[in-house]
Image 1 (tube, rainbow, N blue to C red):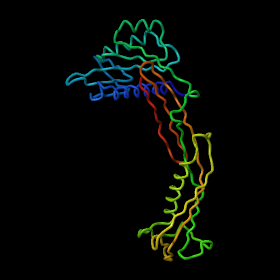
Image 2: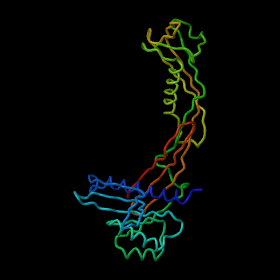
Image 3: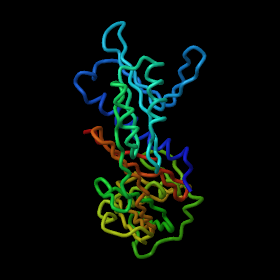
Image 4: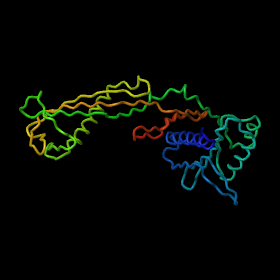
Length: 285
């Protein structure tokens, strides 16, 4: 269950992201110092006022414009009392303009906003995540190797007759550098998985786990790959890695602020010790 605080924070993050993009894209503000602060506290004559979003823009040397935003992610309509309080906030911080963002307003709230010409009411729509198309078919993929087989062919030997080798404890000299064979096999397995994933149609598959196998072969010049301590010169090697592909389409939230822009937020996700942080696609009007 999402708390009212979490719902409010989510809307504030959306509005902040939209306004940041607008400031970055607008020719008039691109080169002017601008700052966006969330939950800023302003004290005037001993009275504390909290601004959900506080924007300052240095329009010229010694001249700073202030814009504030009030965000109410409520199911019920915002009434006139909330607008009156917001008007006092605008007055307290000497803002040029104040934007009140909410899903809906009562008729009295709309009328009250007209009393203060600095107030702009903006409606926000929270779209159904189920009907939101993920931008660019976005989805997460995680790969987990389950089995790695490494076959080494000694120079001049019959490749069908391979000697058993414990890669967990063996070392090799590769291009003059001593390395652990298990580390070499692990890095090669990761590269093989990455190459295999280039042709894996994850975007066309449902969420879930899929088994996959990748094969790879490498050849080596004289003395390029030597097994220690037996000093066995390796002519070629074959690697087979079995792995699982985990596909997940993240949970989505989708808000649209009338006349300002919209934001599609993709929830972060963790799997097998790997984590992807929350991400946003922001579109300004």
